[in-house]
Image (cartoon, rainbow, N blue to C red; front, side, top):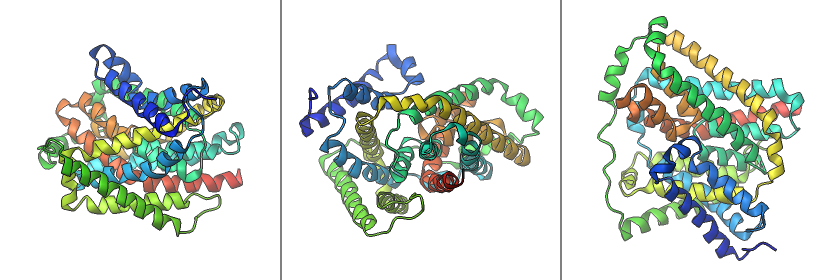
Length: 392
């Protein structure tokens, strides 16, 4: 019997673990450590270790409730608070390079799977499909695709995402010192960088102290949208053989689309009260529950998947460089467009700020565009991988 098994106590353990992680993240002595291995990674692995050691159960009603409700809840709040008009103002080159990065992920995944299929387990297409979600937008899309394709264990993919994804981020940061040399070789028009900051909304979102009415409204709206989307998804048929769009996926698609539509309404202003932060809290709590159900032995698959990930990333970079050559894009947009996909809204501002310090907000907006597009593009990539699994 696990040390902790009562559902509410299990919930307290998970959210307590998350609280300690983000408190540690605020300590100056640990800042460099968490830059290399962010709290979101530990939010998965620490509950996995706890369940393996018998502290918490590997199966609990708590996990089922969290899995059913918190993913659509978090996605709804994240999409509804997106500032899409500012994304559009980024300009033609920024959007082209971000889309080129997305194309590299959608195309590269199936090619990498085709090359490595003889060395991977039969169900490995689900792992790569889930990784496509992470590499087109970040953690929220990764979890959405995981549930869509029915992948049981995220462990190997989180290892690949950490080693390959963050390794690539390090490479991009290194090449920041050579951007002027690259731009001269590429005959890039650096003048397009000058107008970007003037076009986007740099005033930022004003923040207000959260109040009981605002918190009640955010939670109420989020959970009402979640329950309605689950009900709608429950009456729609599964699509694909193997199934890629399940009833859970329909619920996610409904809630994401409604959230994007509402981002053009006055409800987007709920971001002033920190609505997206509540969404991220729900998402990371979901990740702790997924970790608690993980199978440690599955991580043994990571080396083969890591090779596939490296091939995949190479194709992504090749397509980005080809687009940069065709459109004479500065290296700034190559690097930021890549990280807007691979790392999402958390990492793209870091890379953008390393290249041009004042352009970190541009990286954030490109990352936001990545996770808005991600759920649709990653589902398409997952469908291709599913079809390949029937052939190879």
